[in-house]
Amino acid sequence: MELQPLRGLLKRVPAGSGDFSRHLDQYLPGNRLTLYTRGKELYASMWEAIDAAQETIHLETYILRHDGTGERFAERLMAKARVGVRVRLIYDSVGALEIDPGFIHRMRNAGVQFLEYHPIAPWRPRWTWFRRDHRKILVIDGKIAFTGGANISDDHAPKDEGGRDWYDVHVRVEGPAAHELDRAFRGVWFKETGRWFPIDPKKLADAGSSKVWVATNHEFIHRYKIRSAYLTAIKAAARKVTLANAYFVPDLRTTRALALAARRGVDVRLLVQGHSDIPSVWYAGRFQYDYLLSRGVRIFEWDGEILHAKAAVVDDQWATVGSYNLDHRSLLSNLEVNLHVLDGEFAAQLGRRLEDDAAHSREIKLDDWRKRPLADQVREAFWYQFRYLF
Image (cartoon, rainbow, N blue to C red; front, side):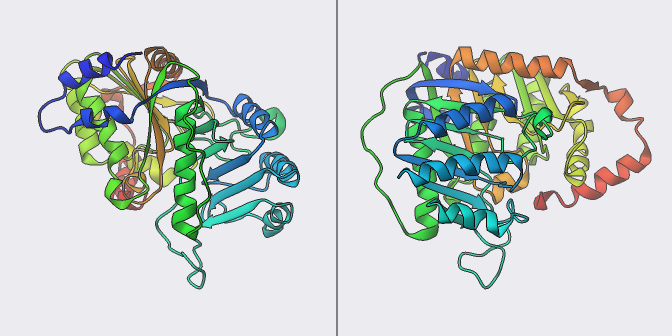
């Protein structure tokens, strides 16, 4: 796919809204992408890739649990470590707060190397309360990678395997972008430990036609990078913006960009949680619904199992999938990674999936919304005051 579709988007970006064109050279061609929205198919593909690993397995996750899913991953990781594959795992201290230390020791004894990101104990090195590693990355031999919103836990496993079958969006990447995801993993490892390990400089062979930018916010000066791409794509939209986000508590710039797009005639649709695993965040996000609905944004609440996706599509040309929530923690505090994709076929596929899900969700109408119980309105206003903590 040529860059002309994106250049067409860029021509529609209002002056002063950011220079998206300076990032065009970061879109690497030659990638093949496979989309997943359920853990059963995603985990099966991950395990197949792990079982085939020959040199390295790099896993970075926010949540790591010692449950059925965690055990299935652990058994595979230990088996590969025992035969000489270099297995490295980064997990976040808060995301794995309840993990059994014996679970970690067992893997470490098998040869798996660990990095606990920012322990919350003040007496330990690299400790901190706020900056978390919210990424979800798996890279096999630097050639095949996975990233998106799914953690390593039974939350995403199918119900017939004891899971909760959360709805998420995750992508398998084959091609040069897999190498960049590996570089992102290695960057965290080096920054936290001071230890660097060689990376194969050879360019990976093209595996497909998708152009992909692996956008990360590792360095503090780049903390707005992912949001900047969101804003510019929304401002450039001519026909349609479809967005699914689990913890939707956006900053004012994002809220206004969505509202302005709807007011100029763009079909803006938001797919959000109908019920949440974190009620305080859910109420805080709903505080802005009146503003958005009154300006023409359509909002759909997902009534199935927990919606955990973080994805968007603009004009069936540009798409983004990753770990980035539209909230203040993702913007200001967390390590995140998103794939920004230039591929009409992939964008249209993701767009159709999100639109079909929205069609099977409950649409919120402005008149009905304004008749909701006073108690809900009070909860929304209260929790919105704490939005910078979410």
